[in-house]
Image 1 (tube, chains in turn cyan, yellow, brown, blue):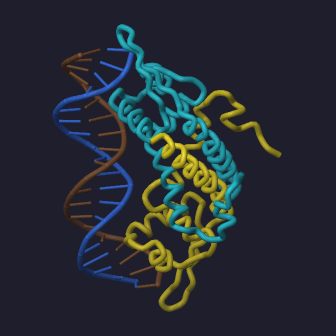
Image 2 (cartoon, chains in turn cyan, blue, brown, orange):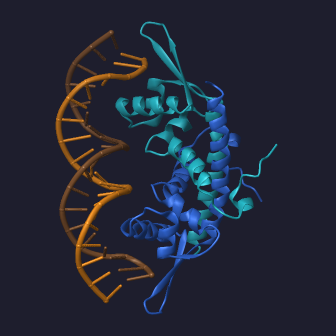
Length: 120
Length: 120
DNA sequence: CAGCATCCTCACCGATACTG
DNA sequence: CAGTATCGGTGAGGATGCTG
């Protein structure tokens, strides 16, 4: 059940479109959002696992970004009452669906690189 | 001729993917890139036309962002030697192809809004 | 018309140290 | 282990005025 919401069909660019796209953009922009989402795309992970797979992120940043992603409904946080406690992070359904968007961005990024290289 | 570059097929998230997606992200992030691209998606425009359709952007910002987009191969700038001079901006082929990405972002943004609203 | 030059502010992010 | 607290730098972006 596809709706008629697309730039190509609209033949114009209403502000609501820009706003909706901007919502998506805000969810994934910033220095660490993408690496974090990437590290969670295929498996749930604990705080320090994410930190390790990403590499040079500080706990302050990781904490902040995860809180952000959780607030935006991208990530689900689960606390296990072990000693010491462990916390698992996983993408929500919406979060997983982001891979569709990322795929398109990947595709465009590669095509654009080729397109601009051929002009030199 | 589709290539096997997609997160879903890869079943993992290589850094090159993150980098390529990041390239795309850099092209469209910032406060004004989206409004500018939106205003050029369906017709070429002059500097002050863009400024007028966007509304509250300062010439300093518009100038800077357009220069940026031009450097990234998103926008073509043409100077006409009238008096006073007029300058036209239009999207390149790559720039126009961005609508595919924006459509996906629009789609996801709308679905995400619905998904999160239903959880309240 | 299509910008450039200056000055200024604030959010983003890093480094480091500490805690339940 | 999973964070919080504090300090400090830097760059994106705004305001205003001027120019070829």
